[in-house]
Image 1: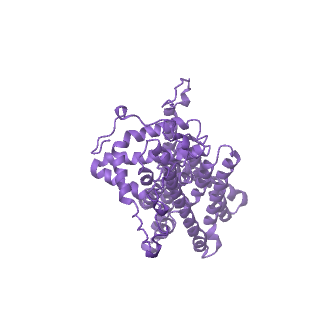
Image 2: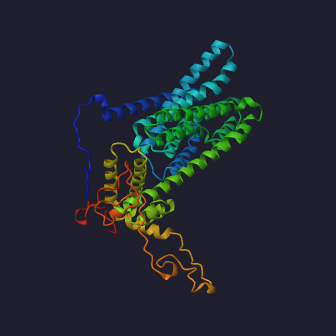
Image 3: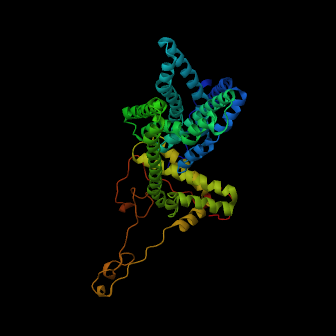
Length: 482
């Protein structure tokens, strides 16, 4: 049996102090913290303390719903929370600060150059703001794409990263707009439904909380498609994010310029462009998520044949309902720790399936074998709690067996109408070879010479068997031990 080292050989290299991980993390946290303090001071200066508090209380309302929606989209292969926290902080602090400073400077420069303040405001809203704001938000997507490449593997990841970044940006912008509207109402004495604050809240929070996420999601889709492209398509990988960014700028400009289209221009753009675009992108993301579940069901049988997974697991891991049932079962019998262990098992198994798919397509990278072994070791260490839960979920969510069609009396004796299960036509038994979708069995498998398909060069069949029971690693405590 072929073997491979479970972990790479570490080579000690001299690294400069600025290349150390803690230095980079510290610099990033410091940058975001300073940006947050500056943006807090600027918004408070424009709205006043009372207006800031009112704007903050109203602007925070859609944030949990939007973050939960993007997290739901990412349930198949959930990324780490630290990525989402970084994206939200970047959008709320760094991107918002860049937008406020750059938009104000550009608008003042245009007003001074043209001596037309009203025209400068229109140009600033329809031309300057979309370019500046979408570029600032796209910077977070680019950083995750470059430095967290392992967590950025497809369209759904791009949508989630871009959407959470835009949610943070919209949060800060809503504080500014709602706080300013509240200050206006204090000067005019308006209150209730007829107030500027109520109108601003209805337009920005009730009607269009998805506006900024919708724009930036186009950029995220561009990066997601680039992540799916093979390494040799360098031009495509560079042009697709730029195309997504340009589309985001264009839709943002159309949305900001809708007020210039007449009395009903805003509602026309909202009904004709925003709502259909939102529906189309929602369908695209959900369709992509279903394809990811199909990838899980298609790729994991190779690991069943190698002994790492049980036969029921590819079905259970390829169904969101079965995953939920498995976590509930583990929580009932092993507590919260058991549910978390099942969730980690599901995440690792999904990562293994996606890694194998990238390997078959030639996009896995040099660390394919090491990464695969690390994920499989993690699965093996969690199997004591996860396997019984997934087996229960597979049985609980399996579709009912089809009822066999009755054979008409006149067909008896002629060989027609007989099933093809254990008995073939005319009652003779048939031997069905085991299903082997991805290539030959490992060298130690007794049927290795009967494999019908060639071996994929970039996604080798698992060349190592699971550890023997006497050398199995420690498994979490639970009622069901292997």
